[in-house]
Length: 172
Image (cartoon, rainbow, N blue to C red):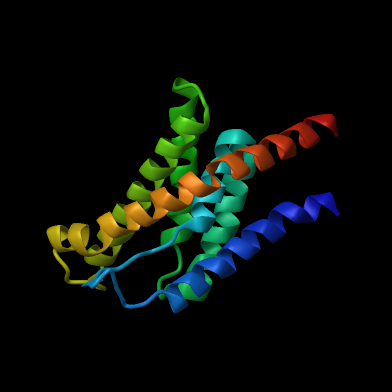
């Protein structure tokens, strides 16, 4: 039963992301901005940091592909970026000591790389014609602020959960 907890958590976060987008008002705080939640990706990055590269990249690939199939017209953007960014964050935190503060900053860096990568890919294949400054103001900053707040709230519980999971894996 315990081995199904992690996939269920990620599936729940996957569903909560879409519900959050569905029920968030179009004009938040009187401004029309695009807020993109990355709850699932934050959890995947914390998994990569506190459990290990193998688990993080496997979950990143599975849920990146699922994200592409369900939400995106082009298969492969998230399927490539989730594992790639997870790997980069893992390598970065081999250089820097892993703690909750560096994990928070690494998650924000990962979200920034993901957002810029998705924008650049969409701009490259002409899905969007929004210029980079417009993207930064309309989507990047609001998304980064939203996910920073969510990461602050969820950082300690995710760290605790994944450290317990890592201990359980070592005990097997």
